[in-house]
Length: 390
Image 1 (cartoon, rainbow, N blue to C red):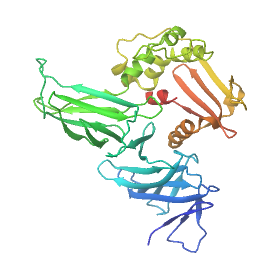
Image 2: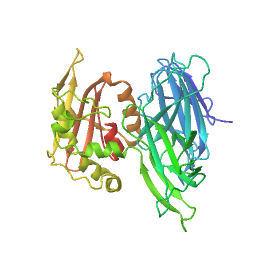
Image 3: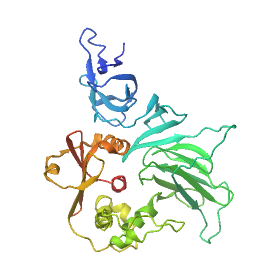
Image 4: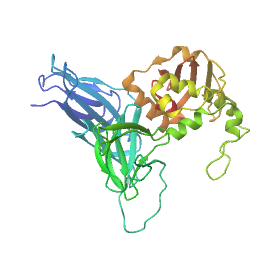
């Protein structure tokens, strides 16, 4: 016998096989659910946990929710945890499976009213959603997709290219879908083998979303090295370095795109607030991720900081915004670590429902605040990528 998860108009109903006559327990209570999929796998790391589950529930409003569950040895009864916020919207149908190689659950869903397919994986910094491209021979159209392109050219001690078919091992801290030298692969903590192209290069393309976050890779060389040699590669290091160099409003007002266009409107009243915040960016990264700061920000001097600061905005009924850092931030409830990914995904997809937003910098501590549907939530940035998402 097995437990049962059912999609109902009252939420996800959990029926315990050991007590079939008992009323079901509802998760996401009050939300109409039309599809629920899950995958249960052995917990390799938790001595007290027998199995763990990844559960994805699709609501009647085509919003996708994530629920964590685990089955302790002591009780053999599932326990549930969820943020209650959708991590994706405009979803028509969803499917999930367990990737034994990477020890992770992967999700594929169909967009609502589109011909797009998305691959979703949860990372340490949030939900990574990549669009799956399928070749089509008719009515071909070019689609521009924001991506991080990392090109690594390997040379010998004499500066000569290693040439083609040189073996390397590539891994990533989180599960990520990439194209390596023209081949689509999923990479994660378990290193995968690749060969250089004819020019001795490894070219990695990773689709990014609306945030500036990019994958962290680890490249390992084993041939002609005596012993394995590994080094980190940060796909978004150029973005981090540019942001760390901001030393005032002039840095943003004078910013140019790669084709020479002005990036920001110099008369925007929020430009000063943004510049004041970014003058703290170097110190923020150094605080939340010292190792990355050492690797990526080497040689960049810290700008003169504006000191401890708070920046906040409130959305008005007409869609305009006003500066607002009031007592509401003192009422904010700390978001649990497991819910931060859902909060960030929800805010980015449904930004118009965010009534208030604020950032507070006190010494090395950076705290984000959101007010959504009358509830104030806060969390402390614990990774450099969280700063980019914010």
